[in-house]
Figure 1: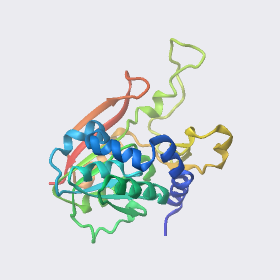
Figure 2: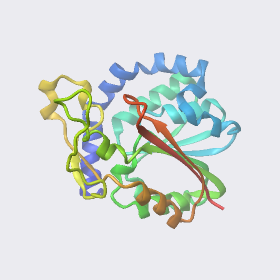
Figure 3: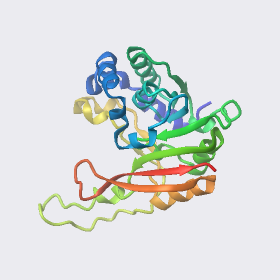
Figure 4: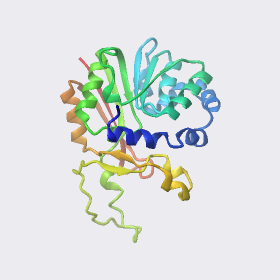
Length: 259
């Protein structure tokens, strides 16, 4: 049984998700051809962490359309995607078939993962694209992650920079050259409703048909301390420029080890 928040997010991430992938990312065959030519391109600036993954077990957490898992499979890894969206699974499996690789795709709430069946199974866990705000209990999330990872395994986590909670609100639309003070609480981590990520790519007339997602936006210290409490040792912390304004942080990457 899914709890209410997970069920809400599942509904949002299943509504027209396959249609969006095909129209925005490309058909599985077209994307597969691109990936086979250069698998590491799909790993963005995290490719450097996956130089020797042949035969390694890798968990792709909230792996959506499977591109990261399939890129890693093309490099010789054995990838398992954990996600809640059936249309995303459909796209991912079609993409894997077109690329000539096999991936496992587990549908369900990651925080209810079979920690006995997957106990100390993974050499790497890769979570990117901004997933943490969908989990309302970070301690449980990282505890599950810790249990399914081997000793000496590596976690690569890339997520939205919490600075974004306030950065977008500090711009005065009436002026091109000055910021204005806006009453936004960076430390507010209450659960809120929001738009699913791909809603913006559809006609505004259709927006009312999209279910909301349920999110909890954390501070940077919330995230780092939850990783430490789970038992991981931090190895690296890197900040990355935003997509629109490169003077502001848009994402961060944490590399941690289970020792």
